[in-house]
Structure formats: C-alpha cells, structure tokens
Length: 304
Image (tube, rainbow, N blue to C red; front, side, top):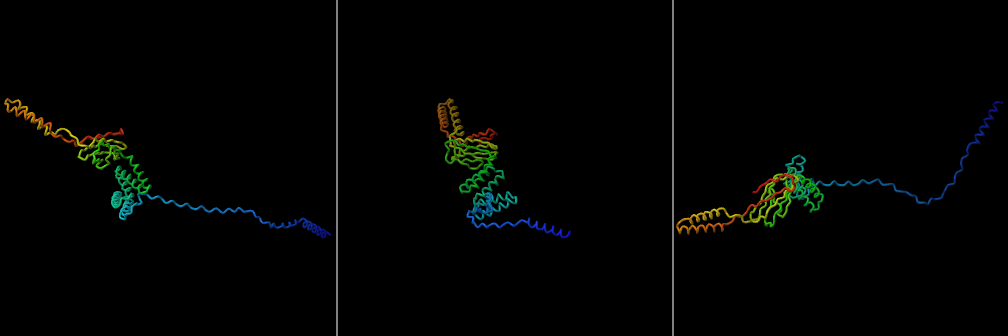
C-alpha cells in the first residue's frame, strides 16, 4: 500500500516539473532591410615618419675650401699634426699650404696659430680679411665664424689713431711697428699692448717718428704734422765764416793805416753779405704728438 502511494507522489511531482519548464522563445523574423547610410570609416593613422636628420654644419677650420691638390695635402697634414699635439709643426704646414693656395680655411687656421702665439693684432687682421673674402665668395657661415673670432680678440688689444695734417704729400708712407698702413687723414689700427713705434715719412725724406707704450683697451692718438720740407736756420759753417769776416773787418777798421781800414771795411761788408746769403738747412725731422685718449696709462716716448 505504502509502495503504491510513493509511486503516485513521484509521478505527480514529475508532472509538475514538466509543466513549470520554460518554453523556448519563438524565433524573431529576419530583418532583410539594407542600411544605405554611409559608414564613417576613418583610415587608420599612418605611423609618423622619422624626421630627416639635418646635416651637421662643416667646421670652417676643418673643411678645406680650396682646390689645389698639394695645398690640400699640406692642410690635411697640418690637421693631423694638430691632433698629435704638434702645434708648431701644424702652423708651419698651414703656412706652406697657404703659399700654395690662399684658401680661407687655411687662413682661419693660420690666424688661430697667431692667436696661440700671442700675436693677437696679427690674428685679428687675418680673421677680418678671412671674413671679407668668405663673404665676397658667398660663404656667410665662414664669415660669421671669422668675425666672431676677430671680435673676441678686440678685448685684448689697444687702439692707435694716426692723424696726418694737411697737406698730405703724395708718396707719404706710414708704418706701425714697421708694418705699412693706409695713408689717410685718419687711420685706426689695433695693436698688441706694449711698445709701439709709429713712423711717417714724406716723399723727400722728411720724417716724424715716435715710440710709446700702449695698454689693453686704451686708445692713443698720434698727430703728425705735414711732412713737406721747410727751411730751418742757416748752416753753422757759413755763420762761422761770416762771423770771422765781420770780426776781422772790424779789427782792420780800427787800425791806423788808411789802406788797412779800407780792406777791413770791405772784409766786414763781405762777412755781412756772407751771412745774409748763407744757405739754410732743410728740416728733415718734425715732432709727433701722442696723447692718451682713454685716460688710463702713460704714453712714453721721445723725439727722434
């Protein structure tokens, strides 16, 4: 009896479970409509292209700017000696290269040699010349480097301003430390601090010269008078001869004899005439005035 009841309960429970089981959803109708709206499809971003590497500018001191084969060989040999630490040998090679061909790159290196030797004024002039030559050839980078080097040297130099009085005789030659400079009413020269010799010589030999001492970042003005020849005093020999004649004639005039007095008067008159007609000396050396326009230091010098 109990077994039949248990079976009936199991059957009831099984039917209830089947009734509560969820039914599957009905399939949705397929949407066959075509979407004609434009699709925004952006292209994938391209990877950034690497920026081209800018070429490193050439060092004007290292890049030979000439075309002469032998000069280039000497230039390269000089650079190698610099790398080996042989400064003097390198400067000699640069000088030989420059004789073969006056390349701006070689001139820059020679200027650096003079700078290292303590010849700052010469180095300044070479850098300035190299800048002008480079600019005239269209190499602004070289000109900029040369001018920068020259400007840096100006802090180590002194300035001499030479003023020639008018009229300036044609053929006048002016030198500063034995180096010929321009002949003009006013010339400015940069010099190494220390002893400076300025000489001005006219076409007939009239000379004006002065030695003085300069100092860093000071300016000295040199005033030179006109170098034309001019008359000075009468020649001493003629003055002495005329004096003897005058004195002798005066003594003769004091004598008692008429004939002697007559001769004495004639000799005395001749002495006076000799003095008046005596040739004059020519002025060949004229003074030069030097003044310190910077207000520092002392200008030392003398007349020669």
